[in-house]
Length: 122
Image 1 (cartoon, rainbow, N blue to C red):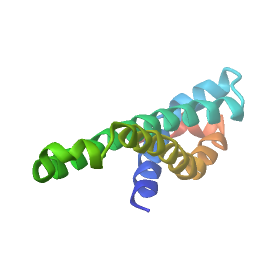
Image 2: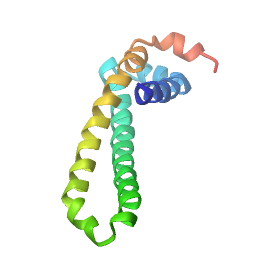
Image 3: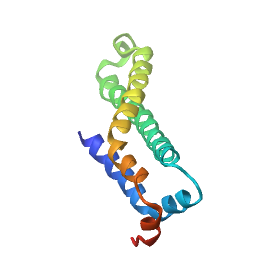
């Protein structure tokens, strides 16, 4: 829930800051699909990087928390393949959350009228 709210806020702020750019693109012939592609690509990049860094930090935290008390037995308990699986699972999960969170701001961006976008003041 926190991730959805955070990503929604980030995408909504990106749309709000770039309303004039969206209006210019639409005046030059960009369709709603082009605007959707721009913001979905940005959201997917945000989700992929967030999932990758979050997964790596999570695995690093597990290693640091449990490696100290287990010392030499740590490699038997936590294999490196488990870490790769966890990071591999965190990226698609983060992508799905990002896509879910971006639906409302992206639809808002695609429906902006060019004339109103050009008059918009931040």
